[in-house]
Image (cartoon, rainbow, N blue to C red; front, top):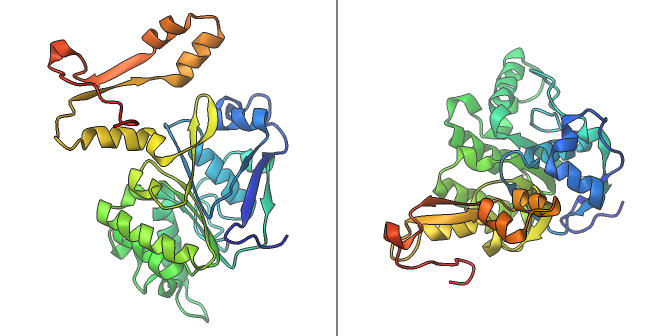
Length: 294
């Protein structure tokens, strides 16, 4: 396993299907792996994006557990468990490995509190070495705000030549803190690190050279930043004249499924097109904008 630049993980391969009655078989990301067989990670920074329920966090969790991280988060040295809820997908995939990182961390926004609590408990129990919190900035993560503790984690604990798996880190961070995270990420990438991140944040997705995989009902596809729904919708609401008053959208997954089942394409487009806000001339709209072109 020769180290390949900034990549410690290359291909994600489905080596066997989940058990027949498993809910995993209904998750779009897993369905895609059943058909395509693998996902190739080609960049030191990879984003998984998409609607809730498409399998982003499930896939990231499976990667983390397969690598050896605690399912609830932390480094590979954490072994606490508050509840055993992770899926069997970790046993169904195999990873192409390019060497082994010297550092690593699996961040889950919903269980970061448990990681912070475990650090405090271990420090209170005492030991012969320095306190664990010294590696996290010297203060208990519970003594800081959610955003402060996360930035402290990145700036103090992430050391480079590492594999960092982050599940919706934007949940803790203001826009300025997200900028700080991008700066920290760039410094770590220059120190031979790899990031795999689930996110809804168009700020994070803008990291230069990042690879973006969009998960949807149709499966998984590689997309350019400006073709992501996150960029398009944000751009609409930040129109230069502040005059965007609504938008139309298409449920692509449902539409394609209906066409596959025999529905007329024009009828399917009409049925699965929705809108938010004002979208017609009768409602006061004076111009329709395609943000992919304007």
